[in-house]
Image (cartoon, rainbow, N blue to C red; front, side, top):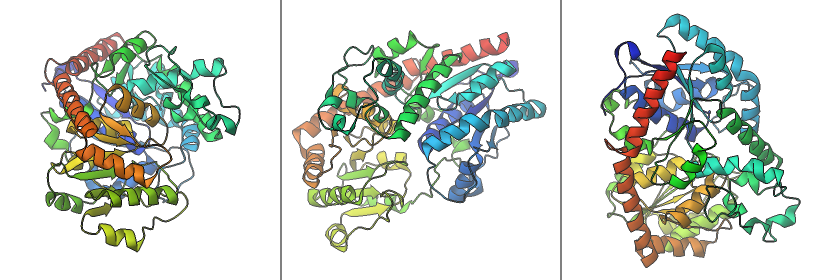
Length: 483
């Protein structure tokens, strides 16, 4: 991928991700892509997450390149040495109240040190930066690391609130069929039920209701940006993107970001810079090397999923009863309020075909030839990485945008099978075997290979995402010269 930024037109982008693991992963890849196109990068972390990065990766997390730099600001929450995902509503509220002042001070500092900041690229969850961009006269692009469908689904939250569809009235609405209400009248969304929209829509939890309103407010603030960047590709979500383009500034689908990054000419210079907030365990790769092609089920629920010990046991015995080899990533904080303890009987039953770790380098695992399927929480990073690797999915959505991702993956794109939220071991067993050996699994595997090829074409030279990235940069150049 050639640089189209050079000489006097070089851009200095301040990159501001929302301080959660999935957002950091996606933003760091985007930053590397932009660096390969000639950008000077300043990557902004919260102090809390920057400490976690240093603890998990050591000083190699910091670049030795003069044009790829890290800065930090406080998130406003009380200091802590814990190594867990922060409480999202508290984090969102604190960011909204505290981060603008620190961010503007940073922009002044960067202006004094040089090179001149010429554009901001900020998370859809960090739109306080829009106000700073307006104050300093700097063009800003908002990056959405979620799917276009989830973005649109959150936007429709305002309509559903106004029509009284949400919030739910009482607990009976969770079980009386209300969540199966068809919402085909929502523009740009196909075959949707209420339960297929982000989880904030179908709950009585006050934290979720706060998050719904917070997301709607952030999307409204994003309308003042010069551009919206989305980690998807036109061929995958064309109808949704067309609808969004009528409501927002120019939309630039430039994904999947992993494939776009793989073309980067300077990727090797930044290989040592990673974003995992937990220490990765590399031993699993040696274990995968001993397994047959497309035989292993990879299980990972992401960085924020919390489940009961009962559901963990159902997953465990579903894996055991399937008789398939599996690589299972289990975070220490995966079980709600308890330590993760697997029974000796399960461990003895699976000792010759199971490998359990607390963290891994997911893209390396997904691209390993032994992986035959991915049991996932349906986070958008995981889904795009699985698509890029051509690995079919078993979908068990937990939170936020994951319900929408699951719906499109299983119903519209045909690249996954869904596990019901009430996990039962016999269902896990049956779907694992269906995905690896069954006729439906064969269809899913074929479909994801077709989408993988389409994604590669989109990110190759002349493809839709490749062209959109160049258009985005040209717009930022024009906006920079105007300002």
